[in-house]
Amino acid sequence: MKCIPLIGRFLFSMIFMYSSIAKFSDSYVYEAAVKGIPLSYILIPLVGIFELLGGLSILFGFMAKWGAWLIILVLLPVTFIMHNFWAVEDSIQHQLVLMTFMKNMSIVGGALMISYFGAGPYSIDAVKKQQIKA
Image: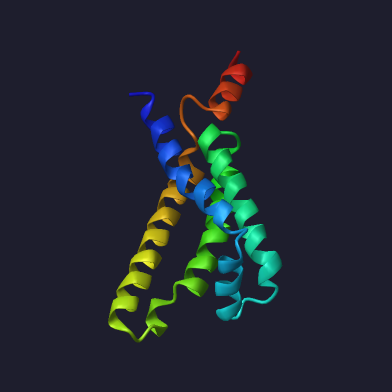
């Protein structure tokens, strides 16, 4: 049972490590520019770096609470700016954007839990905690 948080951290962090790579593509920069994001050619790759750092932090359980806050700070504005379902008129597109919005809010909920409870066993944070007790 002690390995469940490790599996959860792996599954949770996969989306950030995968999507961080895509943030360096021209299509993401273009989409952000169309949405009115200033300096999108700088901000979007920066978001990718933050996603990668937060994802790795959570995966390895190294300063996982800080990594979770980094994910939250990136994901909240991205969700409200890029997935504004309330402004989409096409019903099919509205549903797709709404689902992405809800998925991101669910991920924020998971990140909030990590920011509160930490990484759990089998993490660098847990090893450090054991060394302090000894």
